[in-house]
Length: 431
Image (cartoon, rainbow, N blue to C red; front, side, top):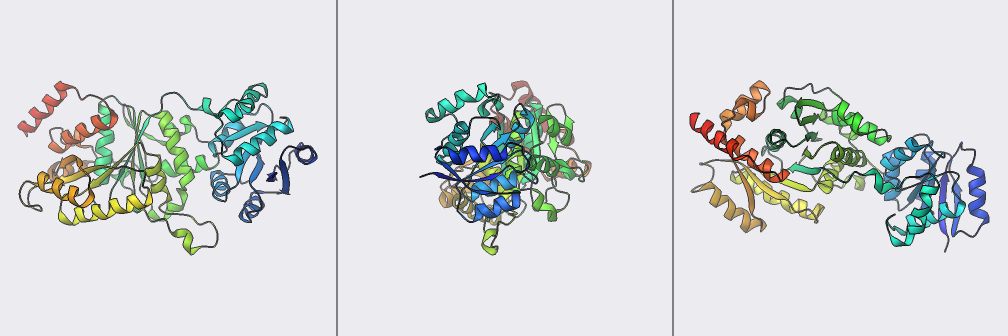
């Protein structure tokens, strides 16, 4: 059965010729609708009458959200660019278009790309080796070559509602990783009230993540743009600040956030993301059309992360919230295996030995082990917040700082220098 195709290459001088060539020859594709703009293309995709879309990079209002909506509707996407226009090809790939071909490619090559895109066969598969072999001769680089061999690690710092200390952990983790010589990018992706900028004494009205997401949506984000948008706090540490107001959450669309994170992997060895607590994903139940999802950014971060740190408080109420949050995470993203970090550990809220009691309770109700315990140090955290500094700057001998440094070494997979461990112990005794 022929693949049903929508086209949206309006304004291109080669559009009529291409459509005629696809329709006249037996290529296994049939053009069922020629759309004039993105709105018509999305409306056609919603009808379920097509399986693939052939679009051009010059299509007005084409962005990552439109490509994501086409994919969600079950429509595979193939892009066409003017011959030799590598910038347009790169933009389409950043928007999430896996197959990008020059407009003067043979109709059979384009039809084959449409069929393979619908079949869902990755472009590295044996079945499309002949297609890949044809691309260099046509002046189109392979998609896989765009990604460098070394990709940075992505760590999501997540946890339940109730201020368990996600931001404290995220900032301390990023800062200590940078001090261990790991190039680090700290990203504030909390759509309910990100405060990384305030914690570090930075301007909270800078474009930050929202600016990066806007560029990602239109396919213009690259490493240079990300560097311009991020604050250089100290050597090896950059910060991408979050939303200045919580009501701006629609600016952080899931696809755009995922694109920003992928670019962050190219920029830094370690990306630490402070994300929101909520995992609900039922906004679409209230709308007849595609709706913005407030928690989509959080889910996109958790799906993309190499490591998810679940930060819990150490009192009974916080632990109960964590147990429920872990259940929610298991339902929303069953493939994610979080690393449990218990913060604010102290005597008082939990009788007996707090670490032993908490570990026993967590194992009983979640079946998981606590990977890291972070001690409470209110004096040190208060001093850091008051001055807009990190713990390493405000209280270098803090036991919380030492625990965060060990966590950073574990997450970044580096060895903490022995002389620095001894220095921290001496500083704590001096305090």
